[in-house]
Length: 387
Image (cartoon, rainbow, N blue to C red; front, side):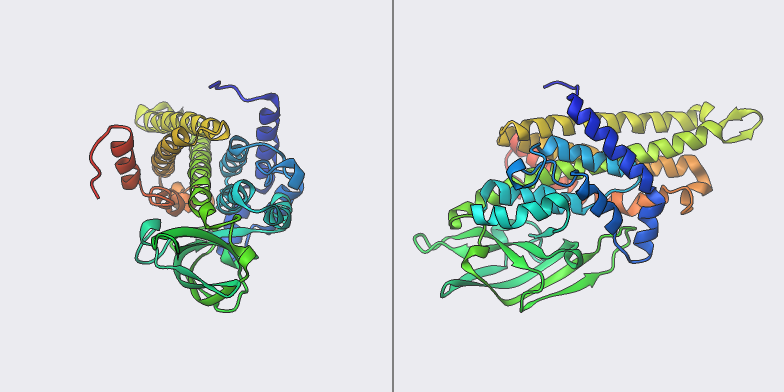
């Protein structure tokens, strides 16, 4: 693995950074507090090709990989615009459809995902099972040529912005009688699909929802892939990109917070003629946070490189580690920035406390730090499974 980006990746990073800074954190917060979406930024990013960097060229994308999409996620977050739906639509849905969908599904959905004119969100988490797909309650059963879906989902991001939702359900294998996961592309206006908005203590333009599926009827071609055998590999193909891009968004948020705090502490003077940043009690915590963010960025790059090389098992380990490292680093960076700014850090104007809720959630979702530690203990350290 090289730590150097290609010239094309460098150009992508510079271009996305410039776009993000034209909008900035003020735009992000204004939209969130008004109950609106970052429609303008999303549309422009789509027109410029940034939303589809990981989608094959034959479907209107850039032909790159998760490395390129992680760059987009990180740089927009580093500009103060962490867009959660980048993780949900291009990273999860587009990857699942590109790798495991039928050719008709790829032709139907990928061009819109690539140019930003369409969004597909992802529904796996449930009130009882969490994201443990072994215990999912949402079930799909055959009814003639169609499928009927029943169940509940929670913490589903951006349903109000999307035309479709990728639903993870369980089906019964007729040959073995065992339950197996299957993914369905369901229109968000389908009969029997209803939603309820969750009130969250997070400043974000993207909303979270409870979903209720009551005999939601979808045609046979809503099933991702040619058969039920595609379900499990399709599900796993979306989880590593999810973790890597969430980590990239966290690293970018950490960079943003440290940059804001460093600008403030380098110029703020309250004790004589020296800046407050000249005092180690202020500068050392910021430096420590910067080190943690940079270490997380290296692990993100490793995870993305492994994933794009098709080394899925190694990418799973690295992706989990990257998500853990970035979640911890982002939370540390934002909290340290608030502390360095003092009272100013809690104001909307200085733009760091507005990120407290999001980075705290990053230590929980899409997989908690504790479950990542369980994973590492079991699969890297060879320890007995504890749950």
